[in-house]
Image (tube, rainbow, N blue to C red; front, side, top):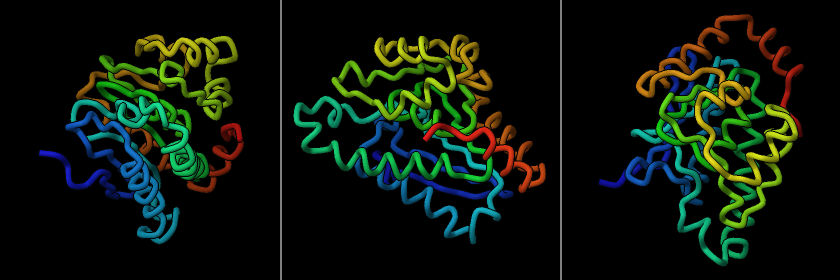
Length: 223
C-alpha cells in the first residue's frame, strides 16, 4: 500500500526525527514530498516553541532505503528545466537553508541508499551516519543536471580534486571510502544506523546549548 503521509516528524526527549515516508518508492523525492519535507522541517520550530526546545535533528527514511534521490519521472523528463527546475530550486534552497542554519546538531541516518538529493541533504547537515551496505552517490551529471550549488559544500569536505571526481563521474562511493574521505562520520551495520545517529546528536545535545551554537557558527558551511 502506498504511504499516505510523505514525511513524518516527531520530537522525543528533545531530539527531532524527520522521516521520508515513501518506502514503496524507495523514498524517491517528488515535488510534493519535497514541499512536505520543507513544511515538516519549518514546522519543528513552530510546534516546539522555537529552536531552544530542540536539541538535535535526525533526518531518516522509512523502510530499507533512506533516499533513492529525485524520482526518475522527474529527473529523466526531457522538459525537466521547464516543468520542474524552478520549483525544485526554490524548495531545495529552503530545505538546505533551514538545515545549515540550525543552532543544534543535525545528522542524516542513511541505510540502503543515499543518492542525489539525499546525498546533498547530508552535505547540509553536520553529520552523516552510514550503513555499511549503503550506496552513496551523486548521479545528477548522468541526467544532464548540473548541481553546481553542491560543489562548494562537497569541496569543503573532501577537497577540490575528489569533489570534481564525485560530481563529474557520478559513481557510487563505498561506505569505507566515504568514511576515509570525511563524508561519513560513522559506518555501522544497516540495522543500527538510526540508533547510532540519534546517539550522536544526543551526546552533543547534552552539552551547553550556547557553546554548541558558538562552535557550530565557527565551523559553518559555505554560503
